[in-house]
Image (cartoon, rainbow, N blue to C red):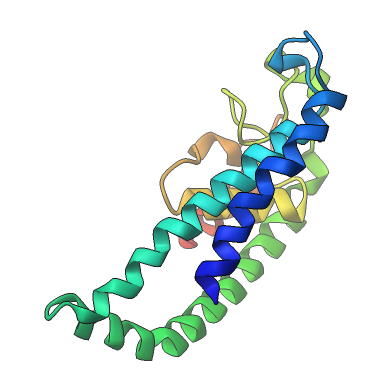
Length: 173
């Protein structure tokens, strides 16, 4: 049944793209398209469908003498993994709440930043803890070492805020 639904998803993609391509057929470069352009949405959905269709290969692992038992063990551990992730998310939320409370006063405008860029995805990261959502993202990416320590600095000379913020930011990793 899942195979048929996956096949339908790929087959229905083609007729659904044809009217959109006729309606949105323009000579504008791709960089000037709006964010919700149907072609961009179709490409994103196609990428997700490709991921799921590739993951279907995992069902073949149960027949393998080496990978089958590992897959069964992982399936039985799934509930424990979800419990761990729930606890980790609570810890992440607790630190994000504290860091956001400490740093939201120091949010800067995009016009005050180099290249008018605001957030952790900029070349010079800034405002990492200005909103709860930005704080959660910052702490998540800090796990992988993608957050610089200077994001705990503030423009005002408030060394105590920085002194408290650095260990709070570092404890989550």
